[in-house]
Length: 130
Image 1 (tube, rainbow, N blue to C red):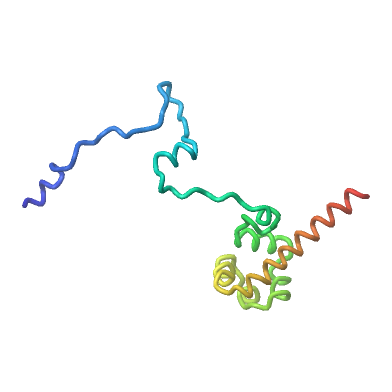
Image 2: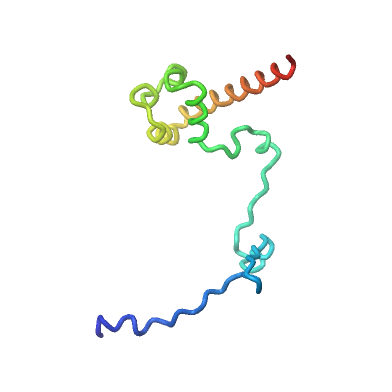
């Protein structure tokens, strides 16, 4: 077997099959079409009413922490949630990594986030009434 001849046995480049219309416009396939093509494809579940009413649904932990830091700052977070990643040289990366590993700390941060959302909605209602 000759090492230099490996590329000779490769199949010729075939044109890629695309889902393009004749005038060059792309037509995306619907979920139904994709499910018909591949029956084993996992169908997405619809969000329940409980999930839709949960303010944490669909919000990433990094987004929660960013909003809390912008609103309160690291010092306030360190006072409310006594963890070292908020006290000493706090960074988003180290804090998110710690919160993912420690459920008790994540619950405290999520509770602070919910309180912040309640305060914001209360302030908005106050402004509307004034």
